[in-house]
Amino acid sequence: MEKDQKIIDLSIVVPIFNEEEVLFELYERLTNVAKEITSSYEIIFINDGSTDKSLEIILNILPKNENVFYIDFSRNFGHQIAVTAGIEFCRGNAAIIIDGDLQDPPELISDMYQKHEEGYNVVYATRIYRKGENIFKKATAALFYKVLQKITAIHIPLNTGDFRLIDRKVIHYLKQMPEKNKFLRGQISWIGLRQIGITYIRNERKYGKTGYSLKKMIHLAMDAITSFSDIPLKTVTRAGFLISFVSFMIILYALFSHYILHQTITGWTSIIFSTMFIGGVQLFSIGIIGTYISRINKNAMNRPLYIISNTNIN
Image (cartoon, rainbow, N blue to C red; front, top):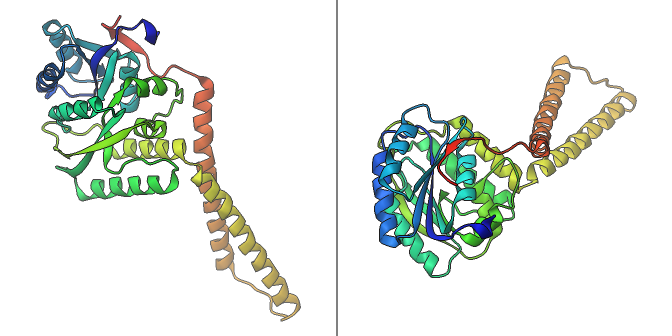
């Protein structure tokens, strides 16, 4: 299918979820940057089940520019799935992934494309400062990336999101990754090839609230960890051995105390604490194993990643 596509110079993939207040400005800034780079470009908006007027605004933009395309999902499938759809349909020799909230400056695309022309397959944007984000979010994000680097065998750059340029070779390999729980920045790092970062200051949101709630952030973190590391499973196994060893030693001590020292160990509180502790460890372990099994189940069912309600892409 990719061989039949007419390859163009640049694709810009933009997932949209309730961004009606910034869409016109976003379109104008993306168009201005794209035109400065090449006349052979496309902008693909993926409407990920927006409940505001985002789709209506996108449809109003279409007649103004034949290089603008849209994909309208049947419901909200999630940010990573929306980006994946854009990547699967884009025709660019290079593709830019950028969120639709204008926190990532479109003007940085020119610098990314320049690096691409120097021969880099991936150009990722590293945030040196994040405006408008509270201490809790900054601290948890920093902790997440540091933990992820420690437990994975691949190098995932710190303080980078999905804002990046990827070339046709990377797109080709991404299309060969069928897993349902997507963590694209991890997949792109796993591919390797020539990658380089450029730094920028991330702006705060001009309007509305972020679509990434704490629940979604935790879900993304779980996808990242279970996609690229088996450390949690190994940790559970080691914890099981450790607890078994400690329990065995306690049994030996109890027998020694009873038959040699003639002192029977009693205590309702210690028994309850021990039972609750072991029960908690068991539930935690089952939860980790269940997360991996859930991923296997989703891939085994092989449902489509998304359902398209409408699009103008042929």
